[in-house]
Image: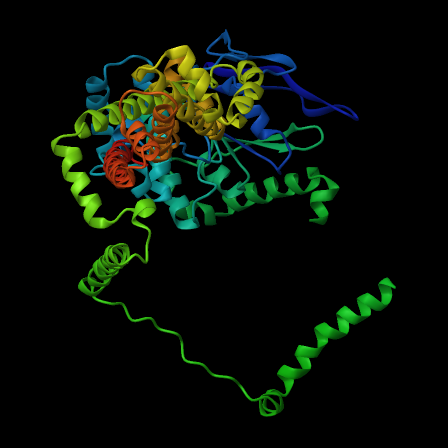
Length: 260
Length: 293
């Protein structure tokens, strides 16, 4: 498979009063088209910085971001992204929130709605399309936010802890729902989380990150068959991968976080 | 010093623990005060309205009787019967409708011009942080000037006609709208702006699809304040120099010691104020529903 996203010696340093602080060591990473990869790491490992760099929201101090063979460093609009905050607009209905991307791309509203409606119905938001976000539950809001990202129709989708604020049960449902979407649409997904189990359950590859400076310490492939049943989290293979991840996180965590 | 303080705090913290260990002793040594929860019984609405009307009637009756018996000086305070007569004359023979229409128009024009201009200025600060930073001290200066003190100047510049009253009303409302709308702009979440840009939005799209609807609740929230300010501005303008308007009627009546006419004009003015306030509250409700806030 072709490499869809390639990070070429991407690094980030911030100037501080005590000199330059290195948030991200120069790192290289290739993500193949159609894969689901996760970045896991303790807080302060630069996973959100890396996320912002890929999304083009931050300019790296060195290196390049290649998306689909083109230099995409610091350019926005090439990848869809979504944060823990759903950022649905309270004055728009669910349907009109979901078509925001198309609307901005100057697709006529009526046509955009027509395209979005069947997707809402298919992916669990049927009957909610004319409601306003305030009347939706957290899980439903995240679904709407994710569909908005999908309908923007980019090959690559970045998700920064999208389910971080949800309760455990809703989170599991959302994970299964996300896998369904991924297999239907064949997008390349980069998923940022600090939940190791979530990362392994969802991904083809898990990139474990360490701190000071932020870097990728190891890439662990997840050779578990798909579609994955929830029970897979109890198999010895899954548990051994999980142990390996946790071990890496423990070794590479900063002493401060050790104490805490 | 610190040691003793710390020790004191520790020993105090221990005290309740020993109390809970022997609860029966503690409660026996104290007599507990038990009170009934104060409960207020609501009157039926007819009783409330009846009392309100009763108070009003009592005040008017006291005033009328007082004036007739000489207890109240009718020259300075006038009396209800004379006020009623003047009211009828004001509407049948006087310039009631001209004055009402004049004050109403200056208020509404000033209100609309001030609110719209102020909101637009406030929104414009979103376009450039540098421009906002440069403009801010000027806005605050203009805010702190008592605008009514500028009224004589405004009358000189804009003349004796309606324009000068509209200008004073607008000057009073524009700053409130500007500052409140700017507060809305500042409250905008950077992440939602980023979301729009990540979807490939132009600045104009971010402005029209995000900034304006986001700031609407702020813009709407000053409407009721502004209608009151606009009315004040219009009246002050009429006080200073005018040929028509309820403000002029009040001033003229006062200068000619026609106290009954002062009361009539104030009464009509209050009615006008209530009507406009009601209309703006209704407008606010409609707009709020429209923006789902």
